[in-house]
Length: 197
Length: 197
DNA sequence: ATATTAAAAATGAATGTTCATTCTTTTTTT
DNA sequence: AAAAAAAGAATGAACATTCATTTTTAATAT
Image (cartoon, rainbow over all chains, first blue to last red; front, side, top):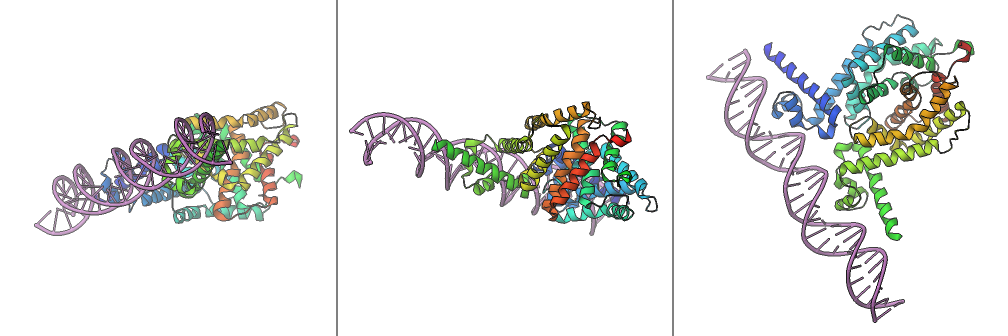
C-alpha cells in the first residue's frame, strides 16, 4: 500500500512539474533534467513512470483534460432544463479555468500546438460528449440556434481560454461581474431570440 | 538592386519555412537544419539574416502579425458608422484566417505558448489599436455593450482562431453561410439590444 | 564590351553543448 | 535476502551556432 502510495505521489509530482515548466518555458525549453529536479526525482526515475518525454506530455494532457471535464460536468444533471444546464456547465468551466489557471493554460497550449500526439488529442476530445448532447437537445427544443457545434463551442466555451491567458499575461483579474457579463455574451449569442421569431 | 532583391527572397523563404515547420512539428521539432533545407539555403545562411533561432521566430511572428492586421484594417475607414466598421473588420479578419490558415495557425501558436519573446508579443499587440479605438467609439455611442475590451475580443475575434484550428484539424470547411452565422453570433453578443432597453 | 579585383553572400563541414535515454550501482521495501 | 524502486553517472545523438572556404556580385580599369 505504502509502495503504491509513494508511486502515485511521484507520478503526480512529475505531472505538476511538467505543467509548470511547459507553461513557463515551453515544451522545447523544458528538459527532462529540469522536470526531474522540480519533482525532486532523478531523471532516470521518470522512465519508471513514463515511456518517453512524449508519453509524459501525452499523459499529462489527458490527466488535466479529465480533471477539467470531471469538474465541468460534476454538478450537471441531464434532467434539468437546457438553459439551466448550459449555465451550470458554463460557470463550472469558468471556475475551473480561472481557479486553476495553470492547468487551463496547459490545455490551451496542448490544443494550439502539435505538442501532443493526435491519438491523445482524439482521446481528450471524447470528454466533451455531454456538452454535445446538451446542444443537440437544445436545438431540438428550439432553445439553441441551429448552428454547428464548432460555432457553439467557439462562441461560448472557447473565449474563456483567451480570457484566462489574458489573466495570466496582463494581470487582468476578472471580477464576479466580469464573469457574469461573459456568460451573458455567451448565452445571448447562441440562444434563440424569441422576440425576433 | 538585384542583390537586395535576392536577400529579401531568401529571408521570405526562411520565414515561410519556419511557419510551415513550426505548424506541423512544433518549435521543439523544427531544427535550423530542417528550416534551412526547406528554404533551399545552408544552415549558416540563416545567421546572415537572423541573430538566432529565437530571433527567427520573433521576426516571423511580427511579420505575420503585421500582414494580418494590415489586411484586417486595409479597407477600414474611421468615418464609417461603428456597426459597418465592425462588420467590415470582422469579415476581413475571417477572410485572412480562413484563406491563409497556415499563418493564422502560426499566430495562434505564438499567442498560446511562451515561444516568442515577451517584447515581441507586446510589439505585436500594438497592431490592434484601431480596433480598440473603434470599440471605444461604439461604447460612447451606446452601440456596443459597455464591457471590457478583453471580453469584446474574446467573444468576437478570438473564436475565429478556434474555428480555423478546427478547420485544419477536422476538415471542417466553413461555408459562406457558416461565416455569416459566426458573424451574427459575434455581433449579437456585443451589440446593445435596443428592444431590451 | 571584357577582364580584374575587392567586397559581400553563401556554403558545407566542424564545434561544443545540451539533452533524452540507458546502464550500473545503491537504497528501500517486503 | 530477494525483489523493486530509485539514483547518479555515462552514452550517444541531435542540435544551434561558428569557422574556413568558395562562389557570386558589383565596381573599376582596360
